[in-house]
Length: 320
Image (cartoon, rainbow, N blue to C red; front, side, top):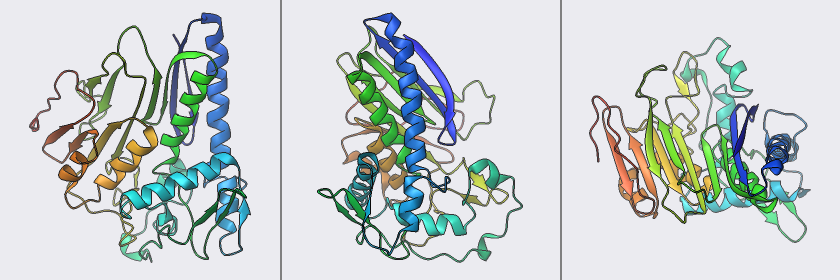
């Protein structure tokens, strides 16, 4: 097995591949890097010439032809919006930018923050008016609607790249895009995945914890974490989880949710929506997934599909 690390999509990326033909692995790693970079050029809202930026600029002007991958992204967004009853809503873009997250995050946190009260935000319009014509491969955005891929794009990209690596000859692949992880194929020993407890300070020896070892025979999995403790700006008063019902930063008792299911895009959607749900514990238990929910003092596990490996223990936390 070989690996590569690089920066893309505003985050750290890590790809591992194994193949029956060892000399093929460097070419597979190059393929993965190129595909992630190409998807970023298509989906980034921070690149003025990206396909997504052009689509957002085209809102209200009728159908726009799109690539198959952007079409797939919009279709997944619409599916997620329906299945979460609007808790996952990629049309939070206007609120996100008005709250100050209108550039790459490194630039955002370098600014002098304004008070949250200064931001003029409204509830998100939702995906009901977004139309995808799969026959013509066009997308139509209503006037005033903009799409933010932040809570699904890295997960879907990880899924796409992991699938393509298997199609290209890998026997096993792991694609980690900033914590959105897609796993495909099987190893001689099970994959073991850890999760960082964002409540603990950087450098804490217990911060990264073993969460699970996938059972033998697992050939596909997706893992994603959503947290209000990272990507904070305006002196820590704002974070990137937006409640579409208000347009403001989410007020939630949870600080972090990790979801483990079959695809990374769906894991990311569920983790984000759980932070906004009135009863995330019962709701996630009904989704046939495994999850780790963290509030300021407690860790709760939901295991309905994928077994955990070891125990999660933290000072000040209980195990559930």
